[in-house]
Length: 269
Image 1 (tube, rainbow, N blue to C red):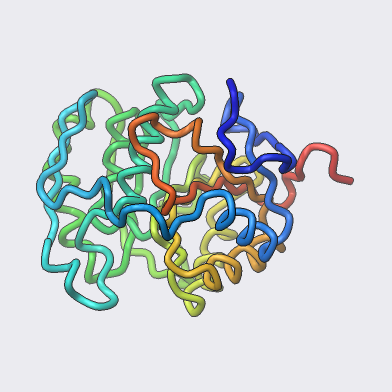
Image 2 (cartoon, rainbow, N blue to C red):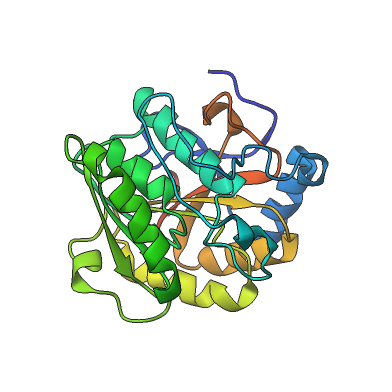
C-alpha cells in the first residue's frame, strides 16, 4: 500500500498486535512534534469535523449514544460529549478489524478516560471483552451508554464500567490479567496529568499489550511533554493516515501505538 506524505523519510517499525501495519518510529519528543506539525498542519483543519452531538449510529452495527451536549460549553469538561478523536479512533477500530489489521474477538480491552464510552462500546461490538474506565463523576453517563447497547454486545463481546483515577491503585479485575489492548482518546491534554497517565499505563500493560491513543492536537507543548516522558517507558509509533478509516481522517488528530519498553523496535540493541 502506498503511504501518505505524513512521515516521508521517517523510520518504519512494526508492533506485534497491529498486523501488517508499519508505524513511523517516534524516537524524540521535540523532533516528532515538529515533524507532525510540518507534515499534517493541524491548525488548518476544521475543528470537530466528525462530531455529531446526537445519538450516533454506525453503518456496520446499530449503536446509540447518550451524552450531555452542554458539556461542550463547560471549561475542563471533556467526558460528557463525543469529540473528533473518539470518532476517528472508533472508525479506525472498525476499519482495522474489517481489514484484518486488528483481532479484537475475545480479547481483553481497557478504555482509559472513556467519557461517553464510544470507542469502548464499539470495541465490545467488535468482539472484545471491554472494561470502560473513568473518574467517579463520569461513571453514570458511561454506564447509561453501556446499558443502551448491551443487547448488541451479548452475541459478540462484553462491556462493563469501572472507576479508575489515573495514578491510583487499579482494581484487580482491570489489571489481572493484563489487557491485550488499551485504548484512549483525548487523554493528552494537560501536563499535570501526564505522569499519572503514564504510571497507570505502565501498571496496566505487559510487553504484549498494545496501547492505541487518539488525540486532537491543541497544544504542541503538551504533546511533546507526553512523548518525552513516555519514551522512557514505551516504544511509540505514529500510525500513517492511509491506514485509518478512509472516510474519517483529520489533520487535527493523531493516532499513536505504544508498547512497553521491553518490546524494542526492530534493530534496537
